[in-house]
Image 1 (cartoon, helix red, strand yellow):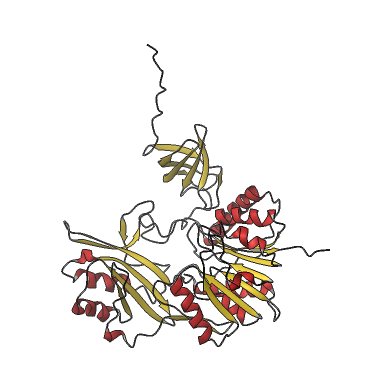
Image 2 (cartoon, rainbow, N blue to C red):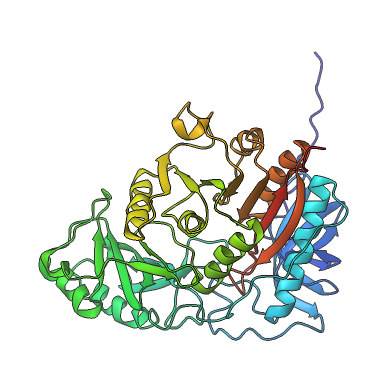
Length: 445
């Protein structure tokens, strides 16, 4: 009988505390260190620091950990200004001033893109920035009611947790939305069963504050009225996804925002995607027009077009703009917005851009320029098809540097050159930095 030797599995380090010297930081401003031949990604740590950190993940080649104590602080470390910083997962970088946050985010992204693409120098342009507080015109609040203790928590999730951190103030929210942190919890507590409310989606539009109350059981008219008394512009969304709009809401203004530099008004419905930072969004649209140098001969394809945020501004100056979006109701909303703004040269269609593109009329056209603004997953499956269009210029707006680097490599391999690159500080005090990149196809000699 042969006895097989089975090596003992190494004990996991998860939940253990380790001491680490931080050498560098990555594109999300996690500190980088090494522990027993593994690279360690450490949230809350800065280059040059020695920290104690609790291990959250222990994989074959790396650890993920969270700083619990800073033993040797970096000179640039500062005290976070938010009283909820240590519990709330909404902001990650308040221990740095905003200039340092931007510097480290761009530095990490620069390293990532160069590593992934093989480029040696990136054509960085000035970063698009705005106010670093009270910039959010949209936020989703979690709601948790503990039936045993009768404790209600309304706020954001703690970092790396499903726990809701109750908050009564937030320096990131628009001042129009801040009163909701006190008024709406009172309306929830007044319900016979507060647990039926799961989320509150807050947003501003045209100087008006709105709320979408998401619930898992029907609300009576009187219960809805209690919310209306606290927050007149209210929508109610049941677990079946059906909006329950009552007669008293007939006078509620249709949500809309304006791109003032292009004189474009964009209406939207609760649940439609809009950029969280209104001021920075305006800068992005204006920079798109400037970088592309849009003219009356341009035929432009706008992918992941949403409600027409880029499409309609481009249509002000181009010959034609074709927007493609995957969500049917947003396609209809974009078409409505084109009509609202008197733009007959902008049209919209629905397609899943990650699948092989259909043999639709829009696919048969020639485009001089392409704009794409995908979600965090990037444009995998679509970027290869974009490259075959051979448009002279491609403007890529990204909210995830890792997927952008992957997609940029495809364009570079297809002969495009990275002409311009800029950071977009859409979410100050967080680890996120968005990007705008202009790719150009060299002219044939």
